[in-house]
Image 1 (cartoon, rainbow, N blue to C red):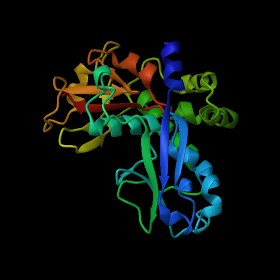
Image 2 (cartoon, rainbow, N blue to C red):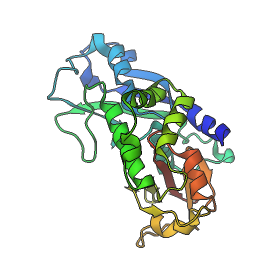
Image 3 (cartoon, helix red, strand yellow):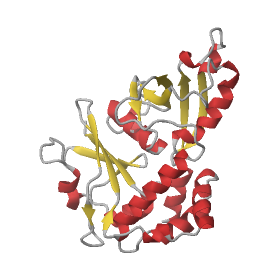
Length: 285
């Protein structure tokens, strides 16, 4: 199990960030409008905002850190994306929204997304469902800690375990994300997690053949240690959905997952750094 956790923790993605020209003064070098970075799957895009601002600071047409009238967000192909999901989850969803799960025979396809391409844009108001990007240095940390409080309650029936962490433990927990310290992350997260969870904290991205998608957070009650994804099919799919376990593929942490995997095992090995288990559902070819 530790080997799998290490592979998940070490997973990285190439990200290309295009800066909307409205951010920059006229005549700014074109190369300043594109940033290429390699980031962990297990992090938030906004953790790289200080890096982005530092790279374009000398060419900005305004001061984004002090201009409260402007709203900032990320887009992909003109559609807003949510920074409050792990980068790897965003990538899985964007890839699967344009293709079915990429197999070895399809890896050479020119349409396969091998780079997460996003665009930083701004406007006077935010698109619906998008959380604003603020100038606070603790925005990501506060949101992440709130996620863990939800996770703690779902797993244990109360948030006592996470609220009982000392200040030093809480700081150590967040630093483990920034410093990529799996040992410290596991040490603290194990104090929050239950060996016999009441429910599994799960978030599902469902992508349909039509190109539409939706996000759900069903209540998945653990009825036994061997409860599988197939067993909770009714919790995953809406009764009105045309998708089901027979015509859909499930992706977690960038890999295809069998429907007969035990939920407890899947959660312990593949949960994300915010405590949730994210799965992406796409129709089969």
